[in-house]
Image 1 (cartoon, one colour):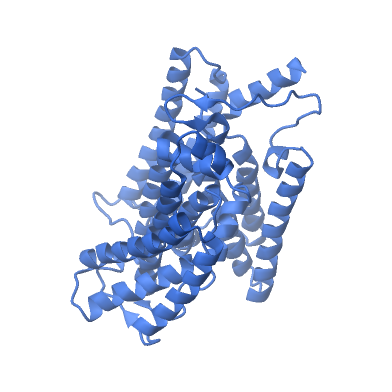
Image 2 (cartoon, helix red, strand yellow; image 1 turned 45 degrees about the vertical axis):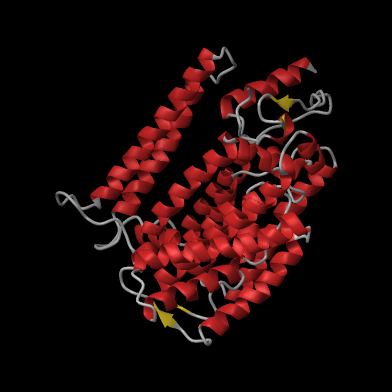
Length: 437
C-alpha cells in the first residue's frame, strides 16, 4: 500500500498537481494529429490556425466564465442571449447614439454587469435555481435583442472591428514573419521556463517534494517547442494577418482568471461552495456573495464575447449567440469539470474548448455536413462526461485520470478534510492544480 502511495506521489512530482488535465491534453494532440493527416496538412496551416483562434475565441471566453459558474454548482443557459443583447446594444450605441468605439465597449461591459447583477440577485438572494433564472434570461434577452434592434442587422464602425477581426500589426524590419507575433511567442517561451524555475526554487525553499531536474527540463523543452512552432505558424500567415487581437484578449483573460481561481481567497471560496455549500457556510464563507459574483462575472464575459463576435462579423443581428451556451458548457465538461460542482479549472476548460473547436474545424475541412458535425459533437460530449461520471461512481479515477495513471484497489483512502488556515475553506475544496501547502 505504501508502495502505491509512493508511486502516485512520484507521478504527481513529475507531472505536477494537475495530472487530471493531461488526459484531455493528450486527446487534443491526438485529434490535431489525426486531422492533420486526414486533411493533408491543412489543419496546422498558418491560415487555418489563425482562423481557428479568431473564430472560436469568443466561445473560449464564455468557457472561462462558465467553468466558475459550474464549479460553484450552477449552470447558465442565458450566455448566448446576453451576448446577442449586449452586441445589439453596443452596435446601436455607435450607429444611432454616436458613441466612440472605446466608449461603446465600456458601455457593453456595463450592460453585461447589470444583467449579471439582475440574475445574480435572483440566484443568490431570492434562492431561485440558476437553471430557472438563466432559462428565463435566455428568453428575455433573446427577445430583447430582437426588440431593441427591430430584428434588423446593425453595422459597427471599422475601429470597433479591431477587437474581433484585427491582428497584431507589422513593425520593425522585414523578416518574412510578423515581428510582434515572434516577440510574443518568444516571451511566452521564456515565461514558461522562468515559471518552472521559480516553482522549483519555491519547492526547494519549502523543503517539499519536487520533480526530478530531467523531468522539468523535458516539460519545459516540450512546451517551448510547441510554443515556438505555433509562433512561426501564426507569424507566417498571409500578408496582413498574424496572431488575432481576440486571441490576445483571450490569453489575458486566461492568465487573470487562472490566478483568481488558484491563488485568491475568493477563488478558493468558489470551490468550497461548489464542493459543499453547507460546510463552506459553517466555515465562514459568504455563499450568497460567491453566487452573486460568479453570475455577474459570467454575464460580463458574455457581453465581451458578444462584442468580439459582432466586431468580427462587422454587424449585429437577431441570430447572434444561438447555441453558444451549449458550446461553452461542452467545453467545461470535456475539460474535466464535475457535473455536481466543486471541480474544474480554467485551463482545463480552455483545452476542452479547443478539443471541440479543432473537432468542428477538422470536420468542416473534410467537407462533413453540418448535421453530421452536430451528431459527432454531441456524441463526444455524451461519451466524455458519461464515462467520467461512471468511473467516479465506481470509485475509479476519472477518464482523464485513466489516461495518465493507474491506481490499484489497495491505495489508501484520502485523509479527512482539513480547514485551510486563514481562509475558512476546506482543503478538499482547493482546485485540482493548486500546489499543497
